[in-house]
Length: 105
Image (cartoon, rainbow, N blue to C red; front, top):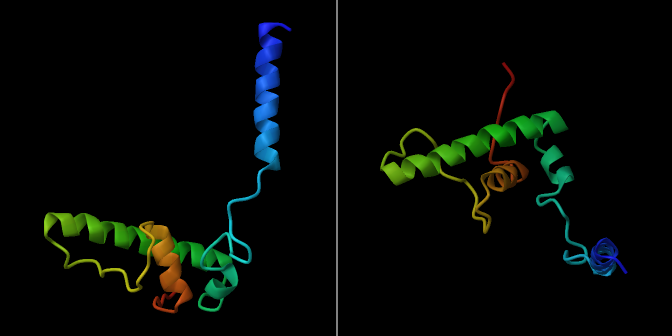
């Protein structure tokens, strides 16, 4: 077997192992948390949920940035208790729990 054939065989074997492996998610657990149907109970559309969550995630990011500098008057802190450190996940959880209100201009 040539060197290229050996490399191909190893890559093929690794890919086959990856395909046969069980997914790492738990049973009955949503891949997206919070679920999209919970988000849509508190917003008008998918588009609105994206816009609201993105703006709130930027506010949370600014809050933590300003907290390190000692000035945290401008942006409110996260309004939910969560294990996540991802600002977008925090914003989506706030939206799903109905903590955020918004209006169109």
